[in-house]
Image (cartoon, rainbow, N blue to C red; front, top):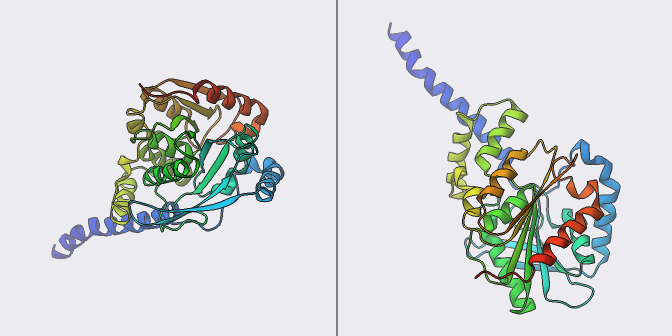
Length: 314
């Protein structure tokens, strides 16, 4: 009887220990810094040659390396700055995707460069040449981009007009940034395939990729992140931040995105309070909208920016 009682008391402890062990592995896989960009998905391997042509183009341009030290926790961040061919103060800040870096956005940099803009491409914390131990999925990055905005204004002057642009995690980062108090120089935002919140996104990917349920694993991962980065995963919400946004925003999403579900762009679109447009790109998978038709993508982006680059909040 005593042996059975002891075993019944130990069983929950064993289960809890197993859950935390699995959560630690999941956390390391998803949140630990990345020093090497992983290979792209099989569905986008067909664009590999084009992608490296863009990277080679970028590295042949007169780029500069910029640095800031974050005002929140003294992390040193790095960025690539590409000045426009014809001098201007109009600028675009580009936010990269999960486990990428500024260089992986070379195709978008070329697009905006051809449109006549200065282009700033930061490496997010725990990515590329920036320091930091853990990926924050846009939540702490949104504050870091405020530092980049201020640096860009200091460099180009108060007459600067700024477009915020991001893809995937970068799109969500800009959506989360939109809910912060931003200077009037920030005129409009373009978010390509950003998630609505990281809690739902990770729950979706846990099931899709690892065939694991949300409970008990995601709460355990969130508890680990609270200890390591100081915030819970439920705080990481584009929707909640967009409810405070009154700037114009263009949402772009691939019709066949199976990584960030299409329903998430609808939720983000409904949340924002300012002028808004939504473009669903036919047959595009996750972060593929540009690659399906680069010229059409460029034209759609240009049309939105031309409409709102002079926009100011009342």
